[in-house]
Image (cartoon, rainbow, N blue to C red; front, side):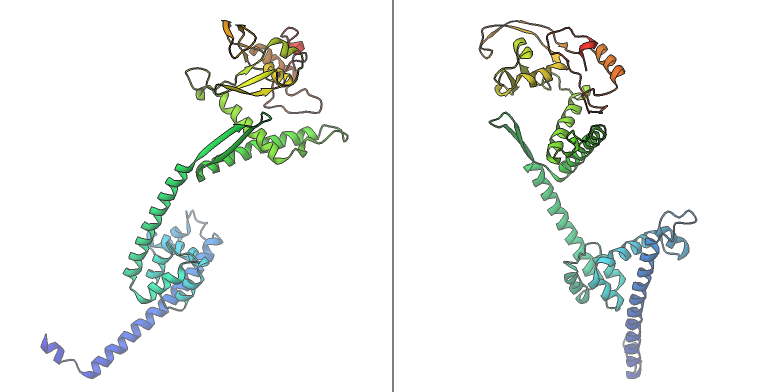
Length: 360
C-alpha cells in the first residue's frame, strides 16, 4: 500500500481533483438533461403520442423506443407528472442541483406545502437519507390515516326524532365512504324525481303551478323515501323474525271513510304510539298495502284486548295491479305523466268493492 501512495505525485492529485470536478459537473448537466427529458415525456404522455402501434401506455412506449426498463419507465412518467405541481423541486432539478434519484424519492410524498423541507434534506444529505426519510414519512402518514379511519368509523351515527307536528327529523354523521355512497344514491334518486317532475310539467297548462319548482331539499326528502321503499321492496333484504320492516298504522274503518280532527290514526314508532296522521294520510297509505284486521275489546287501543287477528291480505290484489298497469301505463292524476314508482289508489275510499273500475 505504501508503494502505491509513494507513486502518487502532487500533479496527479490535482488531476484527480479536476476529474472529480468534471464528474460532478457532468452529473449536474445530466440532472438538467433529465429534467428536459421528463418535461418532454410529460407533454408526450398528455398528448397521447404513444397511443399508436398498440401501445398500452407511455411507459411501454419508452420501454420500446428508448430501451428503458418498464419499471424505470413507469417511474419516469410518474415523476414527470408529479413535477408539474412542485415548482421548487422542479427548479432544483432543472438547475442540476439534485439528482433524479432524490427527486424520484421526494415526489412520492412531496406537496407544495412540504417540498421546501424535503429539498433541505436532499441538499444536505445523500439519496439514501432522502429514501429513508420518505419511507418513515409514508409510514407515519399511513398510521395517521388508519387512526383517522378508525375515528370516522367510531363517530358514525344516525339519530331521528318525531317533532311536535309529527314530522320526522333526522341527523346523521357518516364515514367518508358511507357518506359518498349515500350522497351518490340520494343524487341518483333526486335526479330521477326531477326528471319525472320535468316531464310532468311539460304536459300541464301554463295556469297550473309548475311541479318542477319543488325545492331541492323537498326533492331530497322524497328521494330518501324512495330509497327506503326500494330497500323494503327487495325480498332478500327483509329481516326475518316478525314484521321488522313493516310500517304499522293503527286506524279503523270509520277513519278510512270520513275526516276527523286530524289525529285519527297513529303510526307505531318502536312501541310508542306518538306520531299521529290524519284520515286522508291513512286512506292514502291503506290504498296499497298489506292489511291485518283486528277485533278488539275496548275503545282505547293502547289497553284494548285483541279478540281476533285476521290474516294479512293485500288491499290491492296482484291481479288487479297488473290490470291497472296494463290499462293506464302510469299515473292518471290530472297533469301527472309519471310511469314509474307509482301507487294504486281508490277513487272512492273504503266504501265500495275492490275492483278495477274503482282503481287509479
